Length: 533
Ligand code: NAP
Image 1 (cartoon, rainbow, N blue to C red):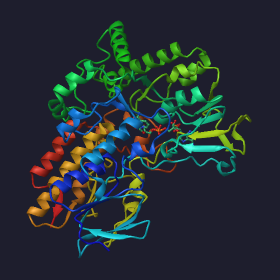
Image 2: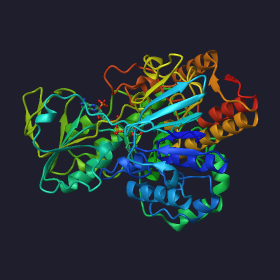
Image 3: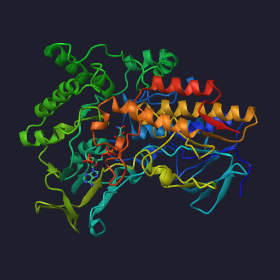
Image 4: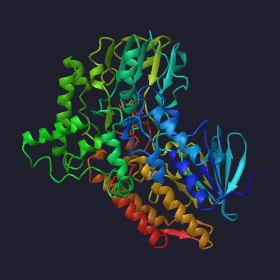
């Protein structure tokens, strides 16, 4: 049993890596545990064809070291998975992070001993390790979920989940392939699989909005001015709703301009590519349904113009949620792919999948689709799944599964009442998934690092939120979401993709500016809302 650590970190994705670097620099003894055999988290596991970040690469990168951000050359406007994984590996080597990571090891349980003021962590290898503080850097979209469709075990072909893709890749040449799911992972992979496969059947339950990414090789014209002002941009990013600088906030409602001007604006944004620029077309797209309808209809008309078969186009037109209330997808040639002769859209809303057979998929209308391979692009038990998979308890009787039985409860998405000295990075009720994730990871790590220094300097051994502060934050999180159109969508933001998961709006959508100001004020006021001893 090891007892000389200050902090145990669970996960070696971007959050865990920065936590190692930051805390080590402050003199804390840290050790991270990682299930994979390499660093990168999301970018380690999601290796499906076409996997690419939907935030531009000059933004989606670490800000903590100016030499790093000046030295690194991104090959494309948006980082593809291999390029991002190369970058994360470079960061791990450059800052010598691997020596404090134990790979191929999952954390099975975490138990807090109040008298000793220590967390005892047990690994799946049977190792036990203790430390006063534990940081869950376990990710928001790290628990892949296959739907419970009868017959999967009988299928004689290959099947893969996009979030657990084989490292050696999958060859679809000459195959009949079925993709289930049309979220970001499905929409990104479908054009690539269509190019390889003999026949591709896309099993769509709900159509989603997708915008063109307009990815392209990195140009000097894009890179040089960005790097010339990198540090200012990184600071400015904290004063924006989504943690990304460079997009002037919109000043007009979509309803106070003429139809011609509105469409001109949408056309301009559509041509630029990217989701923030589109959602920033007007200031009420996420708060006013009538305003949002104009943007939703603009994109539906684009789909109708791109997809040649009118019946297929209509099926691809989302009509059950306002645009932007589910994660807006960025694609390259998604809708165009349906003009290929080898691609077939199957509407499983009207005829659901009944079973997977030895040779394919059977739907409720009696059709059988013969398949050699199935791709599950069916998503994740988002935001709470990874932590609930660990048996997290305290000797005072707290248990994460009970605590979050009706949805997550946190203070600032950083800590939970009754779980002393246990931190989360970009936990539920923080902006994490509604922001540039690396910025939010850095903000949380910096806040936690300051907090641990304060604990050390003031001779304190224990910190946890006051229950009232937590309840107020949960209520605030819900109130902020209820003032928007977000709760109207059946998204993973509300747990709708997991049968039986409580419907609670999980991310904080009050914006990065407001959130960071609150975190900073809490710290400046002596960790207001926290009990410390
Ligand atoms: P997702 O958005 O949750 O989409 C899952 C898809 O699977 C949906 O179309 C869903 O249909 C379908 N599905 C789930 N269960 C099903 C069932 N039983 N039968 C039929 N269809 C089923 O998951 P994701 O595409 O993996 O994306 C998750 C998130 O990861 C994204 O929103 C994004 O934040 C992140 N991500 C980002 C990128 C990027 O940066 N570009 C790429 C990939 C993922 P319903 O809608 O009907 O439930």
